[in-house]
Amino acid sequence: MWRMRSWKKSFSALWVAELLAIMGFSTTNPIIPLYLAELGISDNAALNWWNGAINTFPALCLAIFAPIWGSVADRFGRKLMLLRAMIGGSILVGLLALTNAPWQVLVLKTLQGCVTGTVAAATVLTASIVPPAEAGYRLGLMQMAIYLGNSAGPPFGGAITYLAGSRANFIVTALMLGAAALVVLLQVEENFAPTAPPGRFGLRDALPDFSILRATPALVPLLAVVFSISLAANTAGPILPLVIRDMTGDASGSALLSGLVIGAAGVAG
Image 1: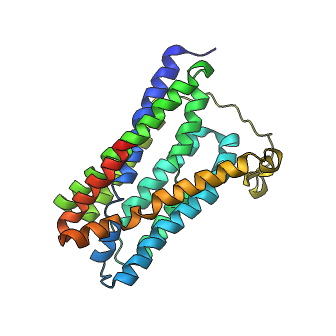
Image 2: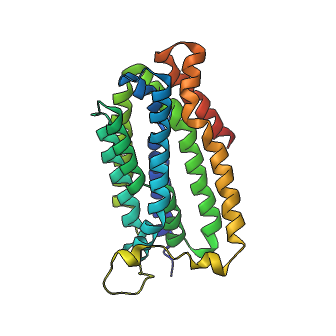
């Protein structure tokens, strides 16, 4: 029996929390390559290498760990996994403000890819707390929060960097993720029933089951199409701030301009 007031309150809180989280994560997008230049990388080849690595390794880790965290969620709860992603992201992004070398940024961003993934966690949690008849509509609203966060975050982050510097941007992001986690902890209710069989939980249990790909061959080309679209969409994004910096010749204002351009793409989406 669905409790009308309870699930609506939980969904509203979850919507706000995910908006804060996505907006927080996306505030750093316009400034990472510019921050690397602040750390002393002046050679363009080296700057492009570090920038590419810092965008590649976190995404790769996110792809590897996403199904593992999904398996853990089936045993221990979806709310717990969302809290893990938000709190972990808050700590790791906050630590970026203390870095003074590119390799430190790479390590922290890679760890961020291992422990975060709020979109998947919030989507699954939404599906588990709303009535089945409302699932499609509420999942659509959750996508709206994600697009709004991706639209507002980059210009917000660019403005913070322009006014107070890159390290202030990381601190603000950490606070936003912490606030999102607090909203989930205090306001989101989950009636969790494990979908995985009880018993001892080990690494083998956390590994995803890819046998569904053999049982459903149509998923393979679908995954290939999604991969190709994502690859094309993310090829230019990491270097956009550097292109804008070269076009304007203004290092201080390029973060703000990059944020506006990336935010405009989010609005179009």
